[in-house]
Figure 1 (cartoon, helix red, strand yellow):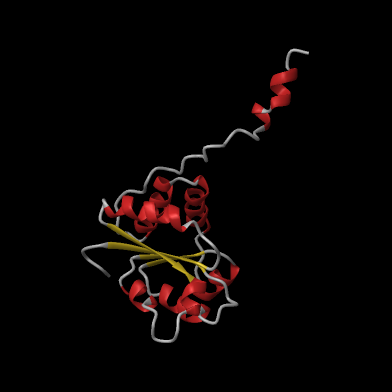
Figure 2 (figure 1 turned 90 degrees about the horizontal axis):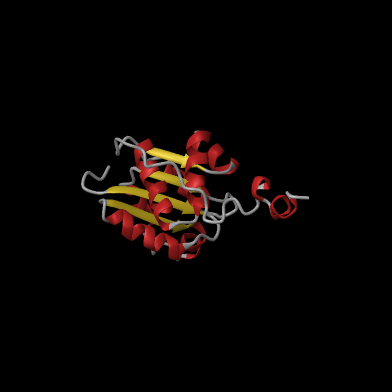
Length: 165
């Protein structure tokens, strides 16, 4: 593993918020954490020999793998992901390919994603490094999304508007 940098790789088989990830990468870099975000489809479209995908995974301490089996590179990506100190698959196909399942960690990482903030994306990487044994402490629990509570029945407009009737 890479002794100087702590590396986390996130592999997505679907669209992801690369603009948010760019900012999260900058935040994590301040803490000596390297984040790589991989689009499975982009690697699939790269001409043979022109992708550095193996190098991205080579020194990864932790990998989040949400790959899609229908891409021809699924098996090779799964193999690369499986070499990391800690691999967290997301989805039935990825779980089956890596042969591991950590539901509580998956819920936690995905809660960081769902929060929608740049800091929480960086915290997803920190949590992955914690699970890999690279960091001694886990980051704080994810904050609820900014819009949390709008659709909460306890705070509904109906209850507020008609509570005095």
